[in-house]
Length: 200
Image 1 (cartoon, rainbow, N blue to C red):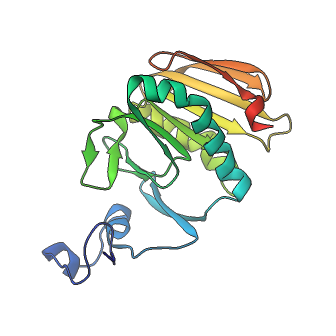
Image 2 (cartoon, rainbow, N blue to C red):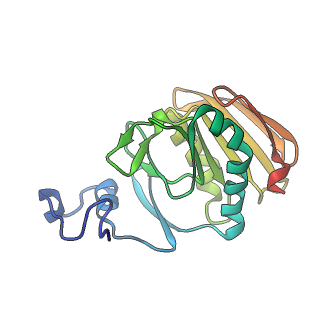
C-alpha cells in the first residue's frame, strides 16, 4: 500500500491535517516520503540530511552480524537503519543507524519505537552528521532513557568507537572510548565484547 504521509494511507485526512503545522513534530508527521534523505526531529527542529554512503550502512550491517548470537539467544530485534525512534518526553524523532530492541518494545503510534524501551542505539559518524552524532544525539538518547549508545567514528583524526552507558539526568555517566580495532565491552543488558576491527 502506498503511503503519502507518515503511516497514513492515501486520501486519509483528519482534523489536524487541515490546519497548518504548528511544530517541527507536526510537520514531520505530515511529510511525504523523502527518498534519499533522512528526516529527523532534533531538539524540536526538523532536520533533513542525505542518507549515508554504502560504507556508512555497511558499518551498521557489520555490527548487526557481530551481535547476531546475542540477538538470537535473547530473541531481541536488530534494526539496521530505517527505524524511527521517538524520544520519550520531547517526542523528537531520530533514525539511528542501528537499533537493538526487545521484541515487545513499546511504540509511539505504529512507526516509531519508544526510546525508553530500547536496549542500544548506534550512530556511525559521517561528514554531514559529525556534530549532531557526536554532540547532540548522546544527550538526546540519554535524556530519552536509552541504556547504551555506541558511537562509531571512522572520520575522527584517530578513528574510534565510544560506548556511552548509565543514562542519568540527561547525560551518560560512563563513557568508554577505544581506538578503532581494539575490543570494547558493551555493558548490561548486552554483556558482549565487541571486536571493533570489524569497522576497519
